[in-house]
Image (cartoon, rainbow over all chains, first blue to last red; front, side, top):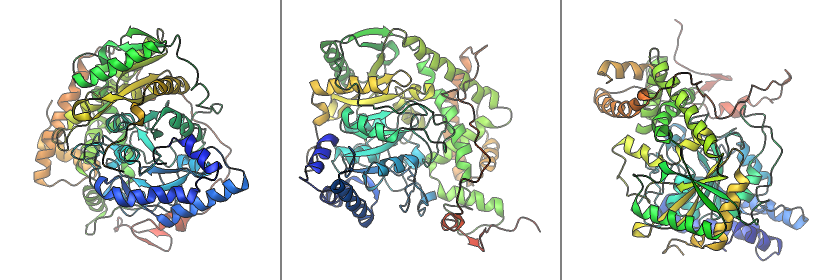
Length: 485
Length: 95
C-alpha cells in the first residue's frame, strides 16, 4: 500500500479494500516510527487527521467521492493550515497557529484529501539543502549523511521514505524540482499564476509558485488538477478555464521535439548526472521523440539576477514580521524601533537575515538602478531566450541539479556555492515557465539523479505526458530507499 | 564595490535587524561575497531593454466596493504577541 500510486489508492478506497481511517493510520504509524530519524514532519495532530479521514469515509460511503477522496497528503509548512502550527521553518512563527487555510489547502481538503501533518523546510523557503530550518535539517532517506535538497526538503524526504503518498511544495528558484531530484521523486512547478498564492507565506512574490510532489507524473497530474484554479484573493492568479492535467498522459511521444540547451550540458555538471541524463534522452528517442540543440545564451546570468530580485522582494515581504500582529517578539526591548530590531534579530536565522540585508541594499537609494533595475532587464533577456528556443521545440530537457545530493555542511559555509546548486532551475522561475523533475537513474554512491523538463507557458499537460510516457517505459520512479520498511 | 562596516550598520538599521559588532563583521564578509557574485550583471549590455517586473502581464483587477470579509478580529488577535481591548500593544511612541 505504501508504494501505491494515487489512482491505486483511490481504487482500493472505492472497493472498500481499505478505509480512509486505515490508510491515515498506516502512514501515521510509519511517521511515528521513521520520522525521528528523518525530521521531515514538524507538526502532527493525530486527532485532526483522523477526523478528516472519518469525514472522507462518510463521503466514500455516500457515493460522492472524487478521485482524491480519502488519500492522505502532507503540506509544506509554508502553507497556512487552519488550526495547525504554520512555522515556515522559522523561530519567527514557532507559535503561529494559522487562523485560516491557504487556497491550495482549501482546494485539496475540498477534494477530500486527508492532512497527515506539516513538513519541514528551509526557513522561509530560503535554502537548497534544508539546513536553514529552525527545527533542524531533514535527512535524505537515501543516505542520512546527505541533504534532501531544499527548500521543500521535508516534502521530498517524506514521500521518498513513504511517510506520505504525496505532498505540496513551493518553488521560487527550484525548491520543488531540486529536492525532488535529490530524493528520487517527481515534482512540478506550474506556470506562474496557475496556482493561487493566497495563504502561502510569501518569499519572492513574482517568482513563488506552489506545486505537487509525488512518486510519479500520473500522481502529480491528479494533484495539480485539484490545486490549480483562479482565486480572487491572489492578485496574480490567472483567470483561465480549468484544465484536466491528466488528459494527455496516454498519448505517445511520436514527433515530440525536445530542445537541449547547450548551456545546460557544458561544464559544471557532474559526470554521473550527465550519464544518467544522456541515457534518459536516448530512451526518449526510442519513444519517438527527436532532440534538437537550442541555446539559452543568458541563462548563466540567472543565478546572479535571481540573487538581486528574490532578496529585494523578500526584504519587502518579510517586513511584515515586526513582532506586533503575529510572530516572535523579543522578551526585552526599549522603544518601538528597538523592539522591531531585536524581535527580527532573534526571530530570523542567518540566511534569512542575509537575504533581507542584501535585498534592502539593492533597493536602497543610489543602488536601485544599478542592481534591481539591471537585474529586471536581464530577467527579460532570460525570458526572451526561452521564447526563441521554444520556436524549435515543444519541451526543453536537461539536468535538474548539477550534482546528486551532497553531504551536510558541504556548501553551508559559502552562500554563493549553495546558490549555484540551483543553476539549472532558476531561469524558469524568472521566465514564469513551468518546470518539473523526474527520476532518471542513479549517480555516485547510489544517489538519485533528476531529469528536468521545462515546458512552454501553460504547457503542464505536455510536460506531464512526456514524463508519464517515460515512466511507463522505465522504473526509476518506483525505486525506494533501503532500510525503511 | 565593497561594503564598509558603516554601510552594513546602515543596511541593518534600514532592515530593522540588530547586529552585534561580531555579527556585523562576519555579515560584511558574506554580503561582500554575494555582491561580488552579482557584480557580473554590470557587464551586460541592457540598453533599450524594458525591465521585467513580473512573469505575467496582468493588470490589477477591480471589484465592487462592498464588504466581503466577516469580523474575525478575535481570531486574528489570538496570534498576536500582546493585545488589550482589541488593540495591539506596542511601546509608547508619542510622549
